[in-house]
Image (tube, rainbow, N blue to C red; front, side):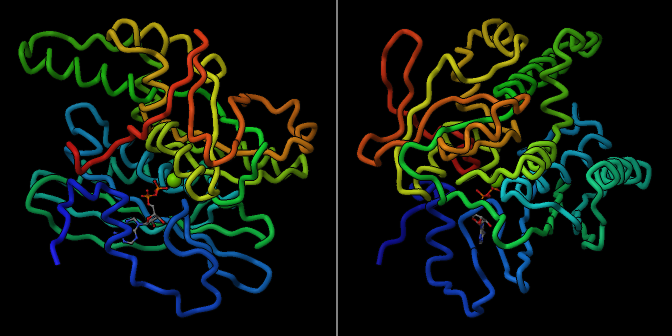
Length: 342
Ligand code: ADP
Ligand code: MG
């Protein structure tokens, strides 16, 4: 039988292709592949597990990623997937592969960042693995979390008519990356030139030192609220909304004018001759939370800070649509990071 190429399959097609034949053997496996974290039952509790990998040259560039920030970020991106299940992260393991260009001082700095994140998010580093690599650095962090089983929120729980919400603002991390890449090119062409970064601090920080939305999960708990579905935005709003829709077997629409963006994001996008909404929809690496609410619960989060209502879940036959401020309706495309298409 002819096999499809990786390009044809894409990242998610490849994961499906590789994992199709795996059936859970243990009744405790509540959720295996297909959500932000796997869910394993332990009495009334659930253990959450999620793993993420960062590869030098793909996810980070040593020319502009300070090692301390890189250590911090590598923990944060894993914890974000635990929060996205409405759970609290408790432990991580961290594995690194290193080429000979790294010395003890560099790795000490990396681990200072890891420690900062562990302290800030109250998680224990409990192990990992260290090995060599032919080229560059590879970092893999596995995060473990815990929740009452009844509190776990999946991508698949949205219902038709649920209100679609997002935390924080979108698109800044992507523009931060554009700035860093631009300054890198200028520097390489002309090594005497000092990089022009101070004007774009917000976006650069969102790229180099993101935070995960622990505050959102805490707010939900304090207000006795549980979303019907949730996902963290790592690939971009469009892509991640499509995951939510697919897993919940629904369509959705979002309103362009409601998608939250920082003022700096809007001006920087225009500087780069990019459409701000495209950056917000397709940028990725925001690590905000996208979630759905049963309309009758709206009162419980009426005063939630840093949250925007951006749309609604619809019938699957309506597809996934963007209503523009100009009154047009476009189907959304998944344009998130797809490393196999680079
Ligand atoms: P996220 O963006 O939330 O980190 P991913 O898009 O990376 O999630 O992964 C989607 C799902 O596929 C997850 O359940 C993840 O554990 C699983 N997955 C990804 N790569 C593999 C792999 N190589 N083998 C098995 N499962 C995988
Ligand atoms: Mg995720």
